[in-house]
Image (cartoon, rainbow, N blue to C red; front, side, top):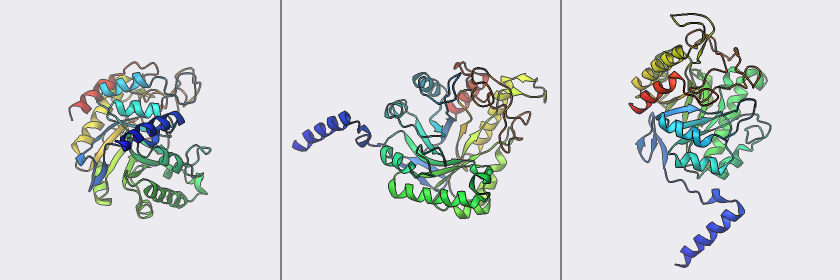
Length: 337
């Protein structure tokens, strides 16, 4: 009885001091088995979306619309959110957990000291939130293999930093896997250098059919793999394949339908997919007050159906949370597979 009262008093004290995360224990057990991600020993297939909510007129992420966003995600059958920078807000993480979703927490290499790898401050975040039930696993970097210029023109410098960071995470948190979001299929240098990576995320844009990536991965590695980015934008730079030039939600919907068909058909190899992205990003290619045409991304010629990534048109919703045609397609695929 005394121990019970101690826990009550301790919990109240932690709440007053802002230490809620110390008593937010994770209920779900996350593990990997062969090519699968497991939660409580049951296969967990990622049906996800990349989430970086920047409001119109801003260049900074905020979560003022988190309640509406989570409601729309649940409606679409989304079970996982991928973020490119940690969410240092217990209230937001609690809402994600309450909605029944998981989150992949991404850490950048150099984010001016904000829980990044370069400063080492990412470990502080893991210490703080490692027991939170919303977190599926930790993800390091986002297709940095396309940018050796960030690492003294030697990509092996990134792989060394990445592998070391993954090892540090394993020391702090033995309860969750560590992944990285790699641009396309990794080469032998990446595979051999990154022994501390448990699960591989691959950003893959191979038109409307990524199926070849799965056979390639099967021959390359026995570790679990998920598509950390896949999808299409809703703007056609040219008229092609019967899709008219200009904003074209049908082209996006058709491409995402075929991409998801390929993913679910190969579920024995791939552990899920995160569609890029939840809302349009008006901050990416020009004036954040309006939606601009343009933008560029490395290795992007595989973007359906024009080979041009119009960076501000990738949302499954527009900036005002209006559903695009692809929303219903994703909803149908996620809820029926």
